[in-house]
Image (cartoon, rainbow, N blue to C red; front, side, top):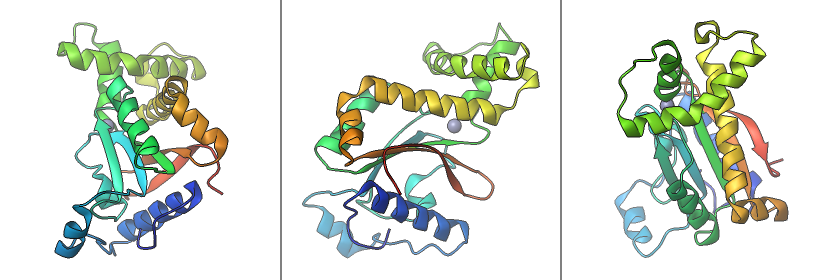
Length: 214
Ligand SMILES: [Zn+2]
């Protein structure tokens, strides 16, 4: 993200991909993190994109996309699970801040997915009540991966396959819940990209694209 403000979903996604490539290669530019830029932004923000991702401490949004202050409108929670506050925050980014892109970001070896799978093995697993709510939203993804693999034992399935299915569920729920977002996609002013971050090599790979980014 070193160019001017993106005016289309494609420009916004291209900027994010470029920033991620700089991060992967170990040559980040750390743009727009200086005192002058901070002062310039005090009067208002025009972020380049919105990002909704897992809270995992290794998934720091501005670092992995090599961007700066005012670039990303970020919403995160454990296992990137949809809630009213998530939807409301993303709608604010689209309707008020005018972003053209929402990136929904999962990652490999996600602890929330791991906990959801473990709860199938250990039925007496002690989980705080509100963590249980997060785990429950991941159960349909586990069921689909079990079915696809012809097994009923979660030890036979891959955590990252479940993570990918859960990412798809998150995006489906986002679209089903927000008329504002689906209207933006239909009109071509907005796209939603579902992507997964690889913890080891730092690469963000898109697997779901809703709208036009080409
Ligand atoms: Zn996670």
